[in-house]
Image (cartoon, rainbow, N blue to C red; front, side):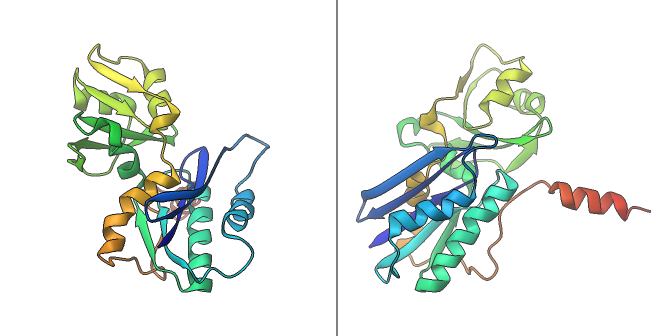
Length: 225
């Protein structure tokens, strides 16, 4: 079965076409300010899938956040569009889960972090490949106090933690590209649900933001009594 993976939550977006646990095509690109934009995601998806209708595409795996607001909507819109045209089922995967269950660190207590901007981060804690906390929105200081002096932090929010300082001697920060969310990892996490035919209803599928968008905050302020 061919599976298309879509990951657009972080500054590096990626697409992956997989068949029977084998990667057929993979593409990733880091967004630059004023450079490579979200509109190019649709172009690259067309290149990967081809211009013809893809009746052989068995499923789509897409990350739904938390992460970059607009980019998450672009990725989800791409997934929905392909799903509707090809009548393809979709599995949505939380971005923090993609980061927090890396194959190379299953025996380490991990904190997955994503930059939420405005001095905040999204975070979740994982042990032995399982999430052991809620999905959180908090400041770097609050996270470090919660972790104490021990732990491994990884993901696209690591730089925010490092800039905040006050990292204990027993806390390890891993900012390598190896620990960023990727479309290939999105597919890997989605596979068990696909095998159980546990698909999402795309009619009701929305990005998982946790925090409100600027538009929502401005609307709330404008309508405050």
